[in-house]
Every structure is written in structure tokens, then in C-alpha cells.
Image 1 (cartoon, rainbow, N blue to C red):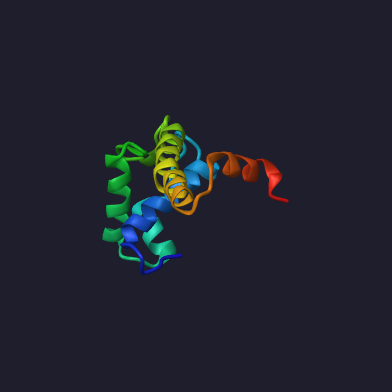
Image 2: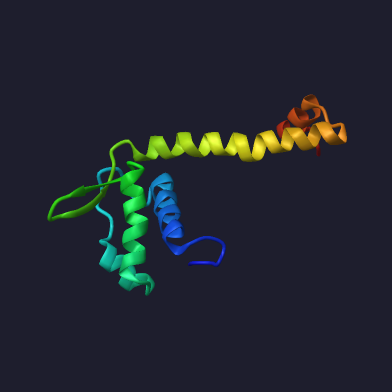
Length: 118
């Protein structure tokens, strides 16, 4: 599950975010404890805790004292908005910059997207 491209705690946070976005984890639903998570993935509990703490800081998860961690009620919408912004900044804007450099018009891109490239 984990790779060497980024710290494990960040990969944990991204994995949980992906599970929320895909509906695997529901809003107000309980998530595994950091100890369960660490045991399941065979990682240091402190690493799992750091990933969970990041999600709490971002407002994606919240704690119920003595019960555990839960997905925030607005987490899915919040994550969608963040990913949409990142998608346009990282993918679309980069694509448009490249298209301008090689002489591809926005109209050509639209035609391609609409299926006119076949």
C-alpha cells in the first residue's frame, strides 16, 4: 500500500481522504483507531497517529472522547472542493499552457473532449 514517494503518514491521510471521496467511509462514520490501523498495515502507531492528526487538523476527521475518530459531516464536500481546485491548477492549467506552446487551440481541445477526435 505504501510507496517511497512521500512520507507514510501523508499516504495514510490521502488513503483515508480517497475512501471518503469514494464513499467507502461515510460522513459521521467511525474510522479504525490508530492502533488498529497500525496493526492492520504493520506500521508504527506513531506514524498512523500523525496521519490521523493531520486529518483532524484539516477538519476531515473529528474525535469523540473515549469513543474514537469519525469522519466530519462536511468532509466529502470539502475534499471534493479541494480536489477540484487542485485538478484545475495541476491538470487543466498545465494542459492549457502546453497546448498554447504547441499551437493547440481551446476549440481543438473541446472537440477532442467531446469525441471529435475519433
